[in-house]
Length: 106
Image (cartoon, rainbow, N blue to C red; front, side, top):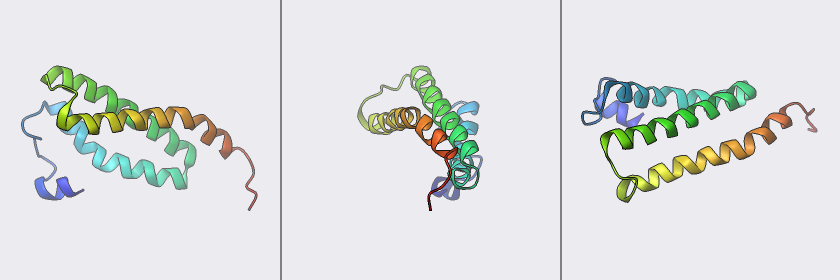
C-alpha cells in the first residue's frame, strides 16, 4: 500500500507496459484479500494464493525477458523469493487442503 499511497493507482512503474501496470497494481488488493480468505474461506484462500503466485512468477519471467532485465543483481533476491514462495505453496497446498477436511481437535 505504501507505493500506492506514494504514486497513486495510475503510476506507470517507470514506463512498463500497460498490462504490467494493471497486474502489479492489482496485487496490492489481491494479496491481502487472499490472506484474509485463508482465514475466512481457507479453500478459496489456498486456491487464490496458488493462482496469484503462479501468475506473478509467470508474468515476471515474461516481463524480465520482454524488457531485457537480467535475473541477477538487485532484482535477483525479489525474483528468487517469489520462486521460493511458489515452491512452498505447491509443496504444502495439498497438506493444507487435506487438513481442512479433518475435524478440529480443539
